[in-house]
Length: 126
Image (cartoon, rainbow, N blue to C red; front, side, top):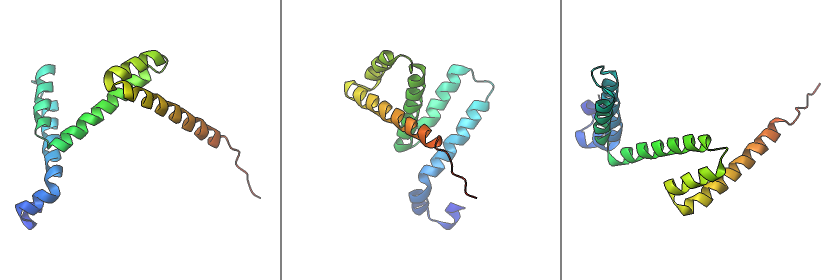
């Protein structure tokens, strides 16, 4: 429909990324439903499909994966601050370790404030 009403350059300018994502999602669906693929060939096919995305979208997907992995490790190591610190240093470098620890403190303080806010009695009016 877009290409019916818009010339190719205009359609690409406005919708190229969206169309690339649509093509990727369709290919991903085809690959995940393909029962003939075993784990490694399926993973390779998904990597190839993702490589067809524009660089900005590939980068965004990688950042999302990194964040997901970080959150998973952070939860797994929540009871072992030293192990978390070591993992953070390996994953992000020494400078990020202190910033992430500070962020954890700020989030903890925010959670405490939020809990206190939730425990404020509500005054009922007659």
